[in-house]
Length: 329
Ligand code: LMR
Picture 1 (cartoon, rainbow, N blue to C red):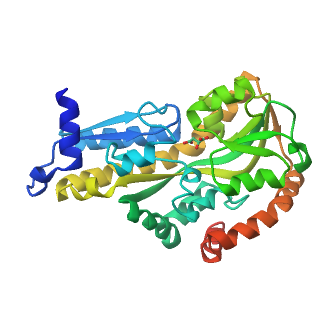
Picture 2 (cartoon, rainbow, N blue to C red):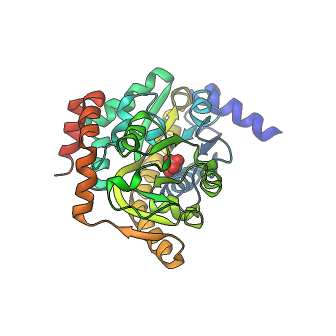
């Protein structure tokens, strides 16, 4: 139809508008894999609303949640191809692009969202984003989701030995695999949109995620146990296509950039709130038994995983990890 024609000609080229001073007529697509009631969707909708309003409707922003447009396996390549203008992947799915994206998977590194935000807003975080430019991709901002916790369908977990023999789904990457290896559990990476079924059918016994993702995808229907651990994090990279970005004239780029800033603000403000609300909902629904670890029990996991932390600090870069640790102060 005419709308798809408009999308491809204006978003991938835009030469006609670029030289002018007018706001360019564009259709921008934002694609992501999680549900509507999440910080990622809240940020994406805030971007959409800002950009559409400030452009007087000249720029249309289409938001596709729930892997409707692209999923974990193909969203990055479609961003590179400019079939989508913004994606917001979990950094754990980006570790093949650069080892720096392992930072959120470093066990017990950041104490809260603010520390993680400060790292990615800082010099070292920006350096990691910059390394995507070789793909024609620009890293614009970090959006937090929050700390991850373990769920499974086999048993209550309170100490490292309890993981033995379980098969756990991870978002991807060798570091998460090694964490489970150290705990004598098996692991496999499965795309987010296949995870509910994998848990239901017993392809895997468990997974690790934020309360927001667990609750909004109803994983508690198929996971009898949840262990509040906060050992790793979900943090997102808001990415755009360099060619698309460079095709925007000054006026248009300013609106889109401010939309990005607004999305970042809303995503950051809503992350903790939505996770707290989701934990409460999970408790109210009562389908998964929630086990909050004591500080001593957390310390047990920390100690067990320390060798992995030390090994990966070297792989990621000691300077990067030192800088990340300094944000906890
Ligand atoms: C997951 O796959 O569990 C998460 O990375 C999904 C997301 O984007 O938060």
